Image (cartoon, rainbow, N blue to C red; front, top):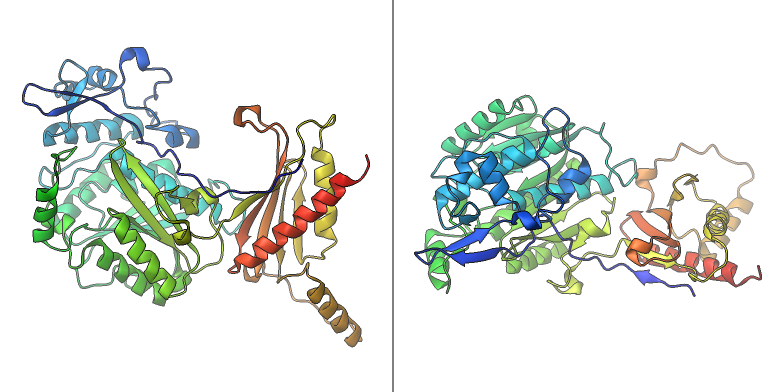
Length: 500
């Protein structure tokens, strides 16, 4: 029996999402223990700077807890911070800073300078942001391949890069063709950031720029750059020093981790909401010159306010997700685009049930058909033929089928499968005596783009039969995607009902 299933999007188990085991020290501070030797299992290998890391390597980092005991033996600077060789006191700023340096060196081959009076970034959380950006960029490329393209040059803008320069460093290590412009308004942070770029031999790929608080956040014109692929920011959370102190005082428990940082990093007028509102306002002028505008947020209420702002400006191509660090600290991320290439379901709806479905972007992927697992023969070839015959009968301006990967990509200029459209085209054809020359098609201007994939049966995921998955690649009208899904579903049902 066939099934139609809307894939609503699930909260990805982002790296760093884990439950840490804690024990008190003699002073009552919470000590966090990494995995014990008996629990090592698939230990994360040390990053090989010569060979680099694979996409799977980076994707699976921090899916389990770091092994503090192993790291402490390998790096004496961290070992000196551990109690009983396994416990780390996250309330100790020096211990947190040393852990950050150790993780960046062991897992990414990065050596960083971290000033004691500036923010010390939690590595798994920052890594999560880069993973999400990779999903956004890969799933909305102009090739419509929906996969990582190693040769594609990507340029990103990191607004408020901080002393660590962590986002550009992580991005450049993971993607050799990525380049960054990194901005900040704090002289000490900029000096440290330049040191980190130089000592990791990345100064040629990371341009560091000093800005002032009154200047545009997105300085493309000042830089002489026409387009970039993404902008990112982790803005100051608080609207004032008073708000920072008041919120800290309201917490019933001490913070899970020590917080170092200067006011310039944590406080700005209007807090994170006003900061990202400024980005949105500037994006209304720049529009498609930046493919993806993105921001990480500290409060769900901020996300909800900013989603309302996007709706007010009729920006309907957006993405939301959640980052979870250590099972306790949750962050949200928001992205928006003025282009019509639609991101994958994982990238666009990664919040799970944490926010109302009415606030989520449209679904971009659906399983339109899955035959009975009790068939005596493999239906894959039959499904492929039905799909190809159906699509080719529509006379789309662009359609290609990859038989090896069982994936097709097509584009339409509207609802070409409707009877009304076909009647209109017939009338136009009859009224035209001679066929005019047709200019080459630019698929980027088409109202609807899609991919169709036959995913093979996979017992590991409880999928006992192949599934036909429709992916919305391009367009501003969700009703076209929904209508097209219905047409294909009816054709596949009709074909399956024919006698074999």
